Image 1 (spheres, rainbow, N blue to C red):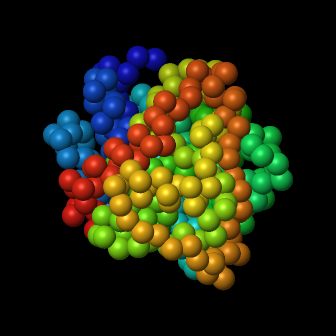
Image 2: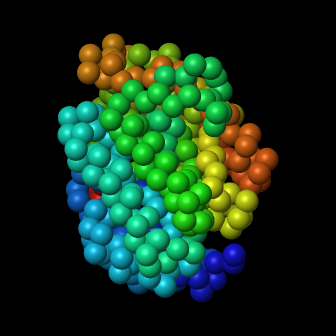
Length: 325
């Protein structure tokens, strides 16, 4: 499927990854509609659409509203389903809201498609969080799913609904299990989306940031590479009914990441601390991904190095940080 003149719907479209995807689709000539509730806790930010706001349609509505979704999916050629609640701690403190957004709303979206547009392909943003604490490394798609928080459980449900609606109703769906994603436009005012954002905020404010533990291994993907993965999945029918891990062969400890971030920033300080007890209970320890399947099947692999991606991100927030605080 070529994307020029195709009608594309992005849920969570004013968010971090959704807005980058929208920007790329506009460049490719697609007709883009964004759905975002702009609820402050969930990451939508109008500044993410700066420069393309005249080239996309933004529908401010909630994916939990089945009436809105029934209307919005009609006539659409392709859906990128990125709407979700990403905070692990919020999911533990308010599990029913997480259930509504990451599970029930996903079912509503698929039902809207089943009844109104069952041939539109859907690429779903899933997460490495559903694996829980790894039994082996690197983690491939066959690893057991044992999430350590409510968010991971509900993301399993959301992903499973997408795969089920492919196998039973023939809706062309696939899921990408994202690892730690960072880049311009990510949430930096708190840790609801990623701890890297909070680290950057503190650096840019000239304050030390905290590293909890420090020895845990992680892999990271720059948002531009993640957008490449979504497009690769959308354009290849062999992806339908399947799940793919995203990841990186550049694996670092959190302490190494902190040192690199300070170095790229040209200065700054951090302090290594013990985990707060509530966070320690849901920490997964070391995690990094085996992404050989998507590299082999869809030809995707990350291109932006961690150093380069951190530099792009810091430069962006130096110029636009006031819009994210």
